[in-house]
Length: 195
Figure 1 (tube, rainbow, N blue to C red):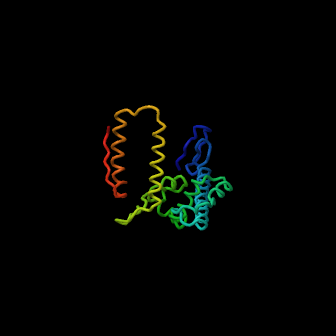
Figure 2 (cartoon, helix red, strand yellow):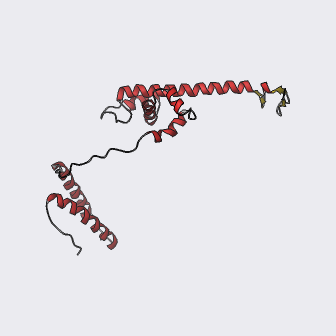
Figure 3 (cartoon, rainbow, N blue to C red):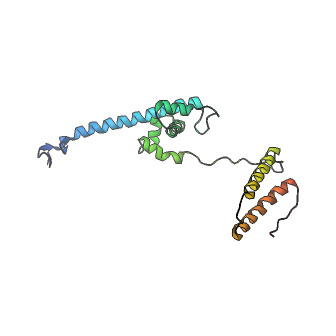
């Protein structure tokens, strides 16, 4: 049987009881099992928390209803950040169980591993709302545009100093493009020219 002499204590141990700085291999193994158990339990608690929150709030990809502050309340009560709670919701939504997660990602057996994986699991693409061609914009939209223009002009009227030529030309270029679009919808023809 191979024997290794420990440099720290000078003891000779068979490899079955290999010592690392006076700590036996089986003690290391016990500690490793303890942490493995902790990581698994940590994932289980997070998965169950996410599943419960999803039952209360619906799927993780949907925002909670306006005015409901369930996540804020849970966050305060559990002393866990809302961002962590969101991650737990995604964890429960994407995987049926911790075993399901570990079977698909065995090398990521920690919560940190899941957090690193999460961005690749969530589709960042948002559905674009397509306008129906030739549909008329709403009157409210025009009121909002008019209010925005009025607000911008009021700001310009409060300026004390003249605008430098480069900025002036840039603003004119932007305005020409934007005003042409607005006037098209209003059915007007107006041209802008610099003085």
